[in-house]
Length: 224
Image: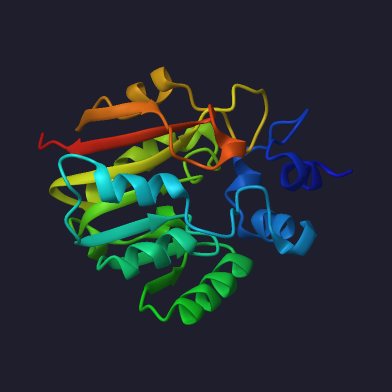
């Protein structure tokens, strides 16, 4: 079994750590989509993560619909759900497979989403300060750990003053990647500058196969 086939089968790139040069390429992710059973890699749930449904209904302070950026949106199930809840959604992914799948998801859901076929790190200055929210779900764990500070800087610049990063960080406690492990301390360290960490705790309402492996997070952008 190839390394990429292992990723789609087990959700962990067992026995090998992919380089930054590999994970920065759209072709790397396209190959995983193409080689996965039913073109559904391990990160694709085929539906919105139920943690998001619960949090949007019960979290305090309440989520007020606004403009949200979904990074590494994949097939777009989370983005479609947010659009149905009244959010103005922009979804971005570099993979051809992901963008085609997301477009189909949005059409089937009957929602309008701004869909960008792009590397998240290539978003230009026109997106600066544009969003009330950024959604994290299997993107931070997919990028190489060397790029985590770049991710933080990206989230900071696209959020409006007082904007929020919310979502799930993958905490599988295994070597290798992607998905790369993200411990609570690593997440706190990554967002220590420029963010107020309101909540970072084990998710309790996510899918069964990810129980104990996802951290629910809600951070507020703070002005320098």
